[in-house]
Amino acid sequence: MNPADPLSWGHGPRIFEVFLEPTCPFSVKAFNKLDALLAQAGESRITIKIRLQSQPWHLFSGVIVRCILAASTLDGGKQAAKAVMAAVAAHREEFEFERHAGGPNMDATPNDIIRRLEDYSGLALAGAFANPALGQDVKWHAKYARQNGIHVSPTFMVDGLVNPKLSSGDTVEAWIEQLG
Image (cartoon, rainbow, N blue to C red; front, side):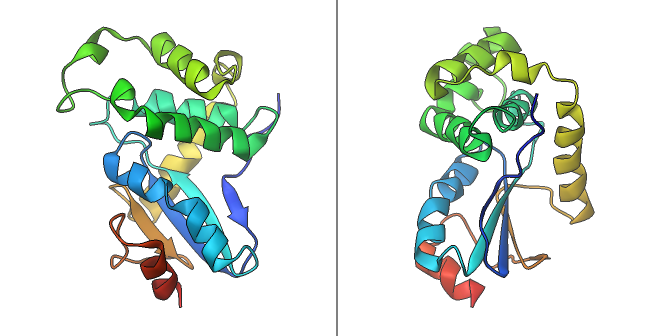
């Protein structure tokens, strides 16, 4: 089994870290702008790093975060992980609870969630999900967020500092302007 591939794109000196909870509607908004940000800012100018911010009020958050990291161990690495995030983003309601506490997902199991992600992403995730080494990767993302005072998603850091002026509602151009 491959190690988890870092969720990093670009190779520029400006480091744009975005802390995302995959089922959060605001995180989905931010996630959907990342490719455009990289294209417009330029891969040689910016490095985008996705940090996964599991949140307990999104009840399947831990399972989905682990699936994303599991995908990063498959062929395709971070691109496979991005495909799982895109699958969640495109079908968010199927991975979330109504008002965080009800609806059809009350009867869903973690295996149901994994199967849905496999169906939507086209990736075989169950075997990779079971890899015990992924526990360290999940913990790393949680610890890194806590060490940086991150409690909600999406949160944005630029060059190691939280930038509260950035929002998922901003345009890509506004993000680029904030990056300077």
